[in-house]
Image (tube, rainbow, N blue to C red; front, top):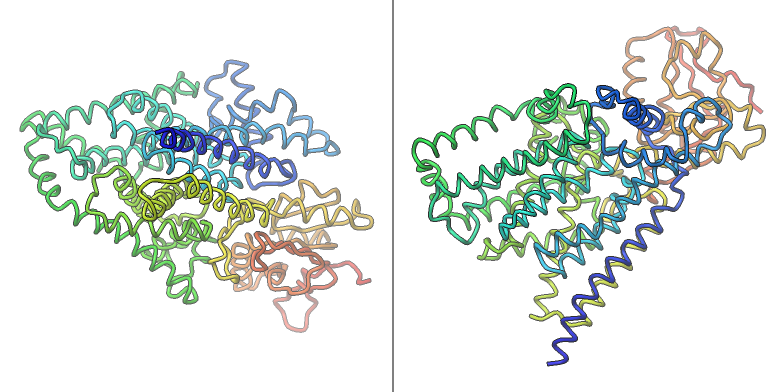
Length: 634
């Protein structure tokens, strides 16, 4: 009896100890060089949006609290804490000040919040799926290079990957035990998600869909369809009302113009193409409830319920098959769809790749953003759910619903002609990690019906060790991580948010007479830290006519390769009078300095001395070329 009690206590204590350990590791890797990076779009938040929000709060200019079309209010609330220590305006006025202090002050509050939210993940997952699955979920989430990488950047996505999955987990808990506290906490988290980024409106649609999915797949068959529909719509209304109250309370601009609440929900870009269908479904089933006591609902979904096993398997197979097709395309040379090309231009690739190419490209960053162990556990979990005849079990329903959510997310993005890059689908990773954790729990269950101390301890230790080793290998370029399963010639995250810019600037700063050097870079972040003269535009005419094309060094990154090459070649086809062949930088094979992000030579940041490469151009044969570097070779 005592051994059973001890084993029970061990199974309770170990997960909590692991959560604390993961938090410590996450903090240790995350704090490393936190101030020594220059992320894309961060200057907008640091020097403009965050100070503007708090300035307008202080002046009670409620209208002025609309700082972005994201809207990014939670970013201002969190990172704004750093304004207590540093004033961005001083750094704008005096370029000699050490910007690292400013960056640390504003990044640290946001980063520490992500660390502190790991126990919240454990709490919700534990209540939903048990402490073993919750423990492994926190290991996979907390030690994910990609999630750690985005958490170190001042950007709405740094918080969105937390609020949206937690809102969904809380709602799943409500569906499991009908405890209203989970319904309201889901609403609060959805409100925070909407304050972060309007894409959170997608969950409103999904929450509506869960009403129908639960009727089909839940074990307990609702005897009274009318009562079920009535209760479900009332609960959904309570959730949405809670979300709106949170949104309005923390977004003072809505106090002046309440219609902004509509702009943030049904009139938002995320709802632009779907709100008529959403409203139509709601109106149809409300009328069915009022006029026919939900008889139409009962006929449709009672019929579907009879085939729930077939439906569940069909949907999981569709998800798994789409994943496998994406893998096959990747391993066979990116044919017929080049996922790298699509994801390098996510908002303009639809015309060339078409619907299917854009849709399948979403699986590329999702699958190869997973550690190989997590990757195989993910597919094992799908297989386990596929083989199970008990789809109504909560773990299998979670896998099914998450698979549907991901398919719908990719479908919605494709309909809007936007490819889902790593950052654009950052909210999905936590769900995939939970699915993988379910797979590991199932795997341990196959070896023993009861989890012994040794199995739990060894499996958690192995998972932590392998994931920590990966973090160590890629630090500090966590957001540029790509699985070893991805062929070395490919790059996963072509929108890397500026990884390597600081290191390139430091290399240049250590050169002789760095203060007098003139550098062209395709990433503006290099200029943030470089102490010489620096430019990053493609203003060919200005460079040439003003004599400003006397560059000393160039910095070229793979993240800007597609965009800049496309721009130069488009200009070249027009035979312009002024052009500099910056596109040649990306194929130059003998740089003076190179950083391989994530340990991949294909994911480079190159520093090239200007007198080593000819970027000149002439549209007239036998005439003097323009655009070449004017510095004399040494």
